Amino acid sequence: AQTVTQSQPEMSVQEAETVTLSCTYDTSESNYYLFWYKQPPSRQMILVIRQEAYKQQNATENRFSVNFQKAAKSFSLKISDSQLGDTAMYFCAFMKNQAGTALIFGKGTTLSVSS
Amino acid sequence: DVKVTQSSRYLVKRTGEKVFLECVQDMDHENMFWYRQDPGLGLRLIYFSYDVKMKEKGDIPEGYSVSREKKERFSLILESASTNQTSMYLCASSLSLAGVREQFFGPGTRLTVL
Image (cartoon, rainbow over all chains, first blue to last red; front, side, top):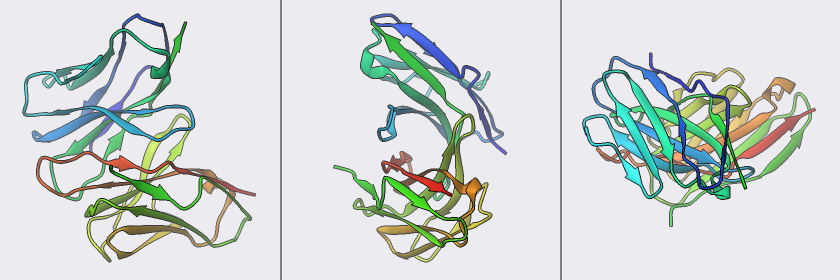
C-alpha cells in the first residue's frame, strides 16, 4: 500500500521569503503522479503543481517548484517570494497512473505567511 | 471553467437521521470521489465511482453508502448519522484519460451531527 508523509504539521514564513514543505512517500509502483494541493482557509482545494514520475525534470509553476527525488521517494514544494495569499493548508498527494484510482493524501502542512 | 458543486456548505443533523450529500460536476468526468477531512488526519477516501452505477470502497466506507445514477452526480449517504461522522466532506472528480490525473474538488460540506 502507498503512504504519504508530511512531517511538518505547521510552518511559518515572512512575506517575500522562501519556504520549503517536505513530503515523502512509499510505493512499489514505478509509474505514478505526485501533486501538491492548496486549501486556503474556508476555501476550495486547488491544485498547485503536479509531477509525473517518469519525468526527471522538476515541475515549476511561477513561484512554486518541486524537488522530486525519485530514488529517495521525496517530493518537496518550494514557494519563492511568499505572499500573504499563500497562507493555506498544503497537501501532498500520490496517485498511481491507472484509470479509476484515487489520491492518497498526506496529513497536511499549515503554512502561515506574515507581513 | 471546471466546476464541482456540493449541495450544502454547512449541514446540521441529529443522530440517527439519514443524510444525503450531493455532488455535481459539469466536466463530463468519469471518476468521482468522496473524501472525509479531519484535523490531523488529512483526507481519507470513503468511496469512489469510475462509471455510472459503479462504485468502489475506499479506506473508510463503514457507515456510508453512495449512489451514482447519472454521470454528473455522485451522492454520499449516511444511513444513520452518528456523532463520529461530524466532519468536512469533500467531493472530487477527474477524467480517466491516460496522462490526465488531476482531481477537481468541490467547496466541501461541513456536517455536524448532534
